[in-house]
Length: 197
Image (cartoon, rainbow, N blue to C red):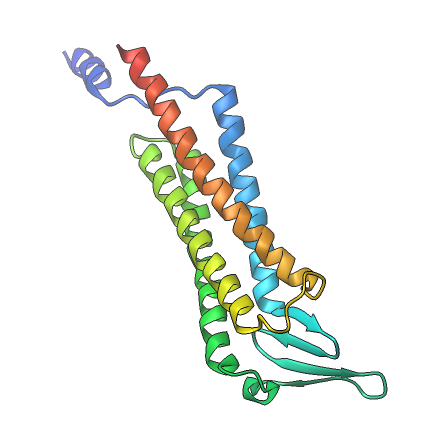
């Protein structure tokens, strides 16, 4: 009698759909790319030197003047850069960039948990992680846009530093991984539903 009850309970328990190799590979690739984006964004925000215009280096955290005799002279008081609204604007730019990294870390954690602990809520965790990555894209792109808007008079295509391009790449990867994550979730759900029918 007990054995029959256990078997009935197993049959009634919600089944986790078996994932194909291709789906697992794509999801793993999205997680790896999201990890790379988090690393690039973190390094870029921590360094913060994004624009080199002639002998001036503009950053999220400080402003530097560069001379051959004395080397770089950096100041944390961004108002001394003589750019209107730079001190206040950089607070917004670095806040958006930092929040983007935090949101991406939580999103990445949800993506990883959904793959490591497969249950009936795995698909929801994956979708929530992808939405957080999309939020990271919006925040990081907002930070980039505010930085470029503040320094539009000093900006040329060659004046952006490697750290700026790291943040730009991270922002692009956040968007790409978020859209890919939501898309793979929707099409695999459709496959699972059609198999049931």
